[in-house]
Length: 190
Image (tube, rainbow, N blue to C red; front, side, top):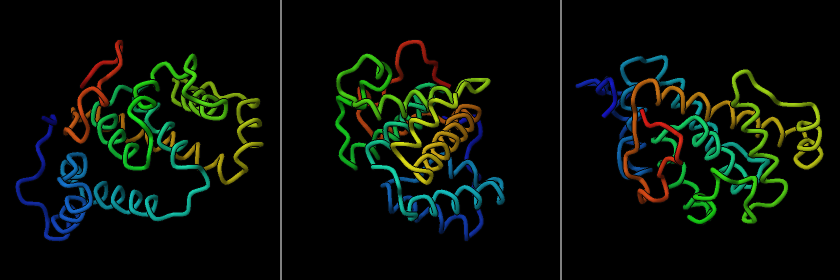
């Protein structure tokens, strides 16, 4: 249960937007429901997430999902791990690969590019960030400018999502099996 309950009666427009997410994902997304307390935060997130879903992607879906999941694991956001795993399974990532993300560096389940992208996610998520010019140059060679910008954007966006959900105490909603969305040892739930 979140630290703040969703508003008892959001505005008609916010209820309509929440109904859309319920139709898309089978239930109301708790972060959106809680955000309905603040119109600017709510609409900013809805517009941003909607545009991101519909924009053209320069990165393969699998790479996008791995990087987003990695940030969720590093920050320790149970909701993001749960929801992200569901989305990743929908786009074809296997449960085995999702479960290997916490220990990606030593895993044979990931190729060199995937490992470097997750290492970039680690470096960009660190406080303070530790991204190096070499990391950027190598990823830029593989992904191009647009791909690198998309990668950095996804890492920053998932940091925002994970940290906001963590601060508000939003936990997993049961989108995936608990073994797939389990927090790795050492990570703390809200």
